[in-house]
Length: 399
Image 1 (spheres, one colour):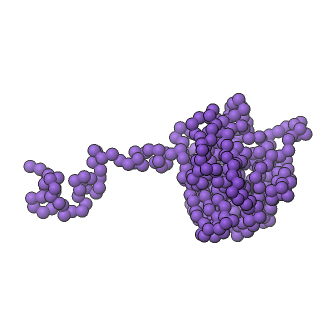
Image 2 (tube, rainbow, N blue to C red):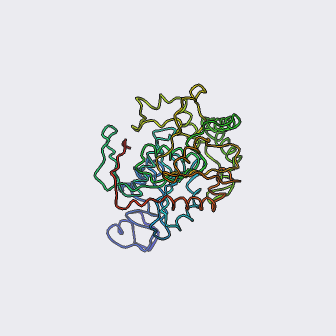
Image 3 (cartoon, helix red, strand yellow):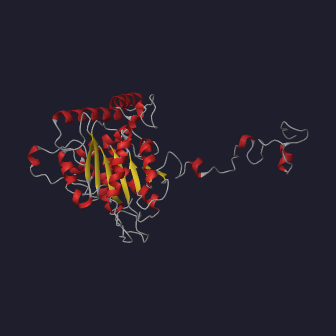
């Protein structure tokens, strides 16, 4: 005799299979109790952990905030955060910029919340971040112009010209932005760098010692990992006053634990600085791009005094650049050479350098109104009227 479910007398599972309706909405022949799928039903791609599943995915989905109303002067802004932040860092600034007609796109660093995760790699690097940025730009502008077949065939598909974006970067996001602009200048309309310059040579011994101490601390925390590594990372994040630990921005919780895995930019930077030959073989990295010059990255200069006389001029982005830094920090993340190099292009393309006095490293949330006014004014002043003139996009490497 078939197993009788609780319900009206005489109604069995077999009878309902033959077409007799059930009076109980939680019971279904196709799914069983509480909607559980039978073994014959295939789960969705998301449930199977397919290519679109989260978090085991190699492609990050950018968070897009459309403008409050269309504006002829509005730009597409790509925001890149730094350590140990996340996309919520930009929420106060984005709420003001969207009211000016800008489309704001938040990009999360690989390995960070909402960022891409590559299960085949233990530690992300800046090449991963650059690739993800290009993919984010292509998604936002809805124009895939890069052929991804192979590194050798660096061809360009016959799609409409790529729309340019303006980068807004902070902390390690500036390093990613400099590399992205260096490799793909045809994708970048302008660059707003917040507090980290493209050159940090010439720092005092006190500043170099401070940078070396806290960066080695975070590198050690990354190597140790686990609860100890998380404790070390969280401890310094609280000392540094990171918004994620102080409750300044919407992303913050005072009892938050900062994962030591978020320290990968420090590991990647020093690995590239100390062992460049292992990363760049035959003059190219694994993405097929020429290596970025040492003076085009931030951090402590590792050049000897004997070579200082023969140093090349500081390399700056080819696009209009706005560099804003806080004046009330224990250490600078830029050099005077960097400031002079950016100001040299002021008459050429509107590049500028502005200091916010009495502001710390995270002035993007602590001084959001002042930051907004500076950025919005510069965006209007350097807005280029491209008209109908277009150029084919030629990416030097496939993704």
